[in-house]
Image 1: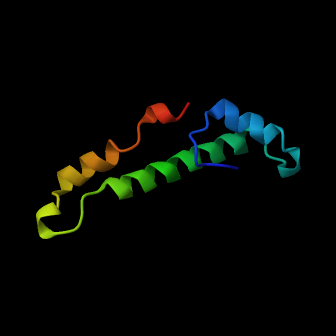
Image 2: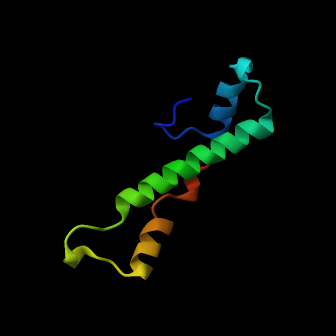
Length: 77
């Protein structure tokens, strides 16, 4: 399954249903869909955390804000 683009739950489910050889139930498909979005969110958060020179070091509060604002829940549809 591709995860390079943001698939909606409906698109993901349709793709799973068109590949019955996987034998995934709707429940399993939705779990896998959620995992893909969480993995994407963590990757985006990691990429957005400021780092580098000592002047770029952020406080824990700033890192928290970056991580929790890096991937909108609107991406999970």
